[in-house]
Amino acid sequence: MDIEIVTLPCGPLETNAYLIVDGDRALLIDAPPESFLAVLDELERRHARLERIVITHTHWDHIVDAAKLRRETGAPIAAHPEAVPRLEQPRSLLTPLPFAIEPAPPDELLDDGDTLSFGPLHFQIIHTPGHTPEQISLYESTRRWFFGGDTLFPGGYGRVDLPGSSMEQTVQTLRRLLQLPDEVIVFPGHGPTTTIGHERPWIEQLVSQWR
Ligand SMILES: [Zn+2]
Figure 1 (cartoon, rainbow, N blue to C red):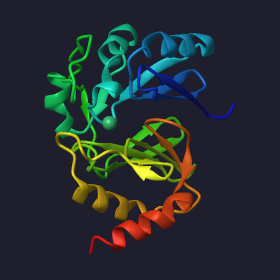
Figure 2 (cartoon, protein in one colour):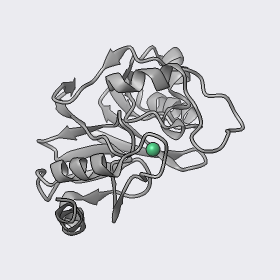
Figure 3 (cartoon, helix red, strand yellow):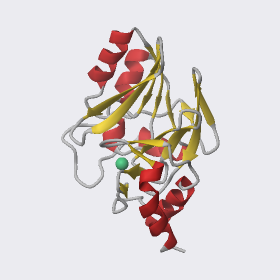
């Protein structure tokens, strides 16, 4: 059976949780609000065990159910070193939230250049700051899959008008993504997939204006 990518848009911002399933084991990328039952349901249906929870960045809509999922499944949480303070003390962004965010300090750290292996897959960790300082992306070069959190969307990048975000870092990150092949499929933190090739024209234009 081939590896399956289950996309679960969850919570008020329809944040994508990605459950990657390889036979009886699974890897979760991001844990948005209301993903808890959805993830458990998918795991149960496939008789799969959750092996790890990777957090792309610490915005609340990507982390709310992480602690609960770790407790239920025993899967460790992995994130960038700069994510530690915000996972230990989560906050809302611009407006208060009607619920508390449970702290989810990571068990493992993932930094630029690290490799995260999952069955036959080997994800290269790329630090992709800009939308947030701690954001990481996971790139699987054989399959040509890129899980970028809010790094890149069809036609745009993650918003940079939030506390901690930086347009300059976004441009540097996007410049780096131009090195990826056109065929790479981008799985964003919200909405549908795209490809590097499809986004390349506007990215090239943007980064050329920022020399
Ligand atoms: Zn975000």
